[in-house]
Length: 115
Image (cartoon, rainbow, N blue to C red):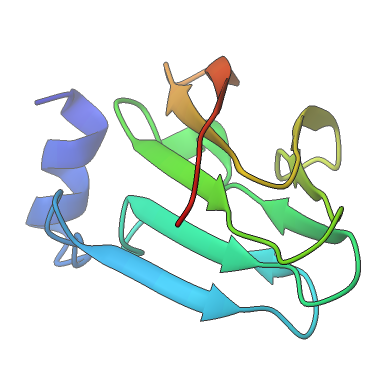
């Protein structure tokens, strides 16, 4: 466990269980928090949406996996807290994002078949 994850626990900041999942139809963009579920399943609902990852200052060792389960050709643009685009996750794609305390990195985009 990284120092920042221990620090958040000591300060009483709740952490989502590492196997929890959020499934959501988006009406607008979304900003993720460190206590959000690590597995995020989004339907952009007809429009490209911006997903903002938490600030890196306390995110060392944190990760999110984001799945775009759109019904059409709609993208999720994944940004860091400063507004820089890290990746674009298109329909039927999934990507894991990992923070090392200085930046968020995507660990490759995977195209998947959704039933």
